[in-house]
Length: 116
Length: 117
Image (cartoon, rainbow over all chains, first blue to last red; front, side, top):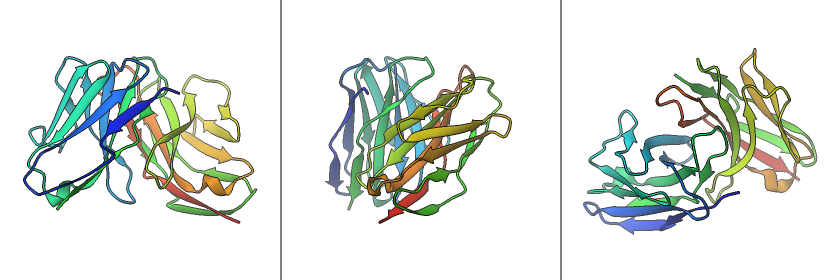
């Protein structure tokens, strides 16, 4: 299957700082990318959907000013956690789809964020 | 709105036995897709199997098969001849089609499968 990469795989930052997570589709062009958040022993919760060149659509309850998403190209989306706090510590997973057809959605390996 | 329900928080199975992981769903979409993913302790999401709502035959992929019962809105995953490496978290997911906002993949709560030697 297609490959989606994420960088970094883990990051530790101090409270109040910002952290950027990159998501890349390596062998296909991703029309749509998704960002999920997963707390320990819980399911994946969709944070936002981004389409290349347009603003992201955030799920209810997700602060768009805190979680900035940029889908600048068909192979790159970034999630920036601004002014991070300990409660933002979580596992963040990106996902990408090559088109609108019903079919597989590819996931990155995830980024574990710890805010101290 | 779409909803996925996995009622088994945990399952314990002996190696080489078959196991069925339950998944029921609710949607008003006529066209939708059902997915199963495996998440080992490393955290990566591994795609296992896909079933389209209009597919007449149950999907199969190696040791994985999807028991799709559309009228009952269930999409159970069957793993035959379980192996120790099958121990992981398993998520059922659904994606709708044309309706605005329905193209997102919605996940169930997950089932933790443990294979005993």
